[in-house]
Length: 169
Image 1 (tube, rainbow, N blue to C red):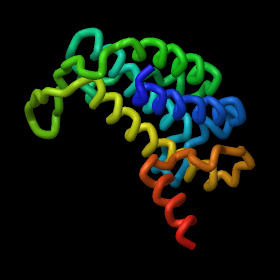
Image 2: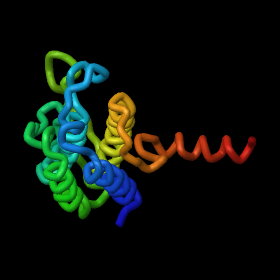
Image 3: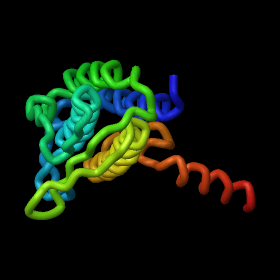
Image 4: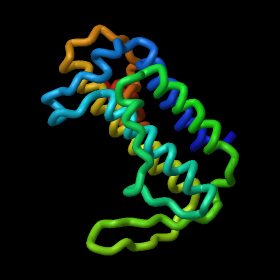
C-alpha cells in the first residue's frame, strides 16, 4: 500500500473516531461560526472529494466543481462513516503515476490541467486536513467533550514542526 494512501486512510480513521462519538444533533446543528453550515456539512464535503477522486480515476478526468453532493450524509454520522469506508476501498488500487486531467472553473470557462493520481491523492489529503481543522473548531464552539487525536486537523508539516520545537525547548 502506497504511503499517500496510508496517510489518507489515517485521516479517515480519525474522522470515523469522531463520527462514532458525535451525537447526531451536534453533527447536523447549523453553526454561526460556519455561517450556517454544520460539522456534518464539512464531513459530507470531505466525502464529496473522495467520491470525485474515485469517479475521476475511473474516467481519467476529475472535476472537483461538479461534486456528487449527498445531503443525507450531513445528518447521519453513521452513514457518512460507511460511505467514507466505501470510498477508501474504491481509491486504493491505482498506480500513483496514472495520468489524470483535472478540470478547473476559476473563471467563465473550464481549463484542463494534467495531473497524476498520486498528486490528486495529496490534494484530497490536504483538503481533508483543512476541513478537519474546521470541524475541530466547530466542536470547540459547541463546547463538545468529544476526545479527538492530538493530530486531528493538523498537517504533517505542522506535527513535525511542533515535535521539532519541543525538542529544542
